[in-house]
Every structure is written in C-alpha cells, then in structure tokens.
Length: 149
Image 1: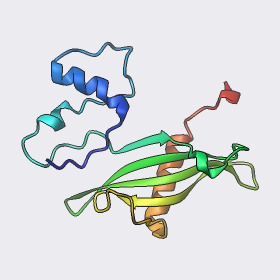
Image 2 (image 1 turned 60 degrees about the vertical axis):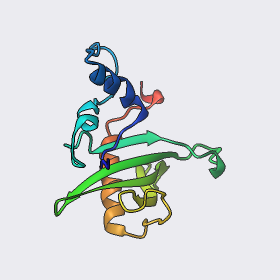
Image 3 (image 1 turned 90 degrees about the horizontal axis):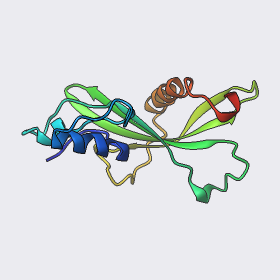
C-alpha cells in the first residue's frame, strides 16, 4: 500500500497503542501522532495525519565546529489538484544575518513523492524553497534556546 504520510520514530509508541486499543497516558508521547487508522485503511488514500515534521539533524561531515548554524530536515505535505505530495528540505538555521536575527536557509530540496531516493536536488526551485523556509521560520520562532531560559 502507498501512503503519502509523514511519520517519525516518536509516533511509534502512540501508533502501537492505537493498534492495541490501549490508551496513552496524558503525560506521555505529547509530540506523537497515532497512525493506526492509516495502517487500517483499505485504499491507498487515508486522511492526512500530519502536514509537517521537523527533525534537527546536524551532519557531522560539514565541519560545523563553531555551531554557527543547526541543520534541520523539514518534511512538508502539499495538496494541489487532488494530488498529495511530500517534500523534504534540508535547512540551515541560526545563521546570523548582519542585523543579528536568525533565519532559515534551504540548502537541499527533494520531492519525496516522485523521488524517494533523494537523487534530484530541487533547491533551485525558488518558490517552493521560499515557502518551506517561511514555514520553518514560523515553527522555529516559537522555540526557546537554553540561553533564553
């Protein structure tokens, strides 16, 4: 079965509980989603559970020893003309601008629905790249750093 869904490892607990019919305690797995309905669906289409997922994934080969930026994998879903498409952007975040504000910069972009092996970098698509950068910036603007606490 083909599913255009974005699922993370942290969704496994809530999904397994859903499949087993076990309630998840209110204080556990708060960032987790239950994908059991997707797994039980009979057709290839199932209601979208999540439209985005952000995972911090620093790449050690980049030699980012000064921690000028953090690397994130940002997954997003677009629905256009009855077609659901999954995208992945690799973003550098916390790179400082001259005015001192943080921003997100897309350095790689993949259309996972058509290219699941991530062989074609589409980061030259400025419209899609800018949309994902803005979406990520919106998510990140609510995050606090250790220094702010």
